[in-house]
Image (tube, rainbow, N blue to C red; front, side):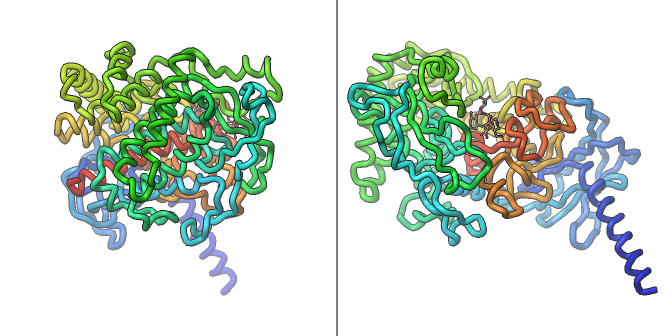
Length: 578
Ligand code: 9MR
Ligand code: 9MR
């Protein structure tokens, strides 16, 4: 009898569990939560026969709010239909779920500083990407690991050979972050990643002086976001050829490593051909770093000066070599060994010229750089990405607000605001009421970074016109990243109830720990599915699979985490009135 009771008990538990899984997935919500004064929306993605929804206290199970579901919306980006549960007017702090029919959402909270968790975690994510040093338990917790890739023996690849540094010359190129789920480091992608962190600091310096992420440098009197950025900048500085100022495109293996831990990955390392894009991105970052670290001369004597010298020299190289593209396919026809790691090749580098000139101008006030700005000004606005850095230059000029060029600055402000207005309108046409999803083109490789970069545009618009509508719009994409989306996943590891568990990230795959390395954002839905893995859903906004096979939708990358750092921290800063 006892055995039978246990049997039924187990069955009952199983049924409960299965139901719980089914129940939980049909109502999509930011799995972290909401600020009391912010808009609050959950999305019902099944045909509820009931027109009502309830917000229920997750501990006491008492209903604290009830409302009516919207009419059915048909998504433009998949065959899904949705109904909106808007409980924005409910603002009592606490922990809740949303219930509609027999379905319920994952829990979330309403509280002040609700984004603090993701703000800290996303920045700490960069620490976990550090190479050439062991991650100690006191900082890394259970993800502590041995040092990988000292990069003290790096070979000049045949494509990079010069008289002073012939093929096979050994140089040192230690430090920096792993680019993504792979173990290589790429100057182009480091460029936008570091710049986004440095810009977050420049836009909210007071806030970042208070933000600690428990990294080895945390008590050195320098904001942790700058300490973290500097870890990669010091590596970038090693990528410049001291002779001519040109910058190697990447420091890499010839082939991608197996899915093994960093310290086990000991393939030969190379620096490859210099490129104009890498050199200009380097110049931009070094110029920006120079003006920031000039305020930290006591902690880092000489750093600001070295950065500026490096930036100027790089820029000079680019002016003499304006069209040295990195096209790996072509390079491999000419040089051995063939290099088949990430390409980051870019055939249009007018935007890189613009950005580098903006940063150099902002740091030096030298009008010669303004002439370059003038000649490369596109007078249009576009979403930043690793291959399109034009807008990064605009952000810097808007922050600088040079009195000599107010007409141009006004033009740029107008462009940012017009772009922000147009993407804000997406909310009305999106079945998830988010800014992302206004176009199917939003869903490409690294689509979640599009969401984050759109929010950065909106936050810049907010800096120009203090209208809350831009803040609210920026929050819609955070809600998206944290769970209010067509996949039902919170895309940031370690956050929320149903989050990415199996990113294409070598340490997370190989470390034998169940939970992935925390604070890393998956690339997100990508109908291109270039990885050839098995996907259950393939439409633009659903083409995501939480499998470590799926590098086209489930890898993590520094250029995707950086805008997440920017938006979560900027919004926290604004809530705290910084
Ligand atoms: O692991 C690599 C990942 O970082 C890259 O984004 C991706 C695309 O370049 O390639 C991954 O490596 C795969 C390679 O391209 C093909 N063979 C399997 C590799 C690991 O899954
Ligand atoms: O983010 C990059 C994406 O825009 C490209 O389409 C893709 C293929 O070239 O490569 C992505 O970058 C990967 C890089 O090449 C290697 N490291 C992992 C990066 C993220 O997947």
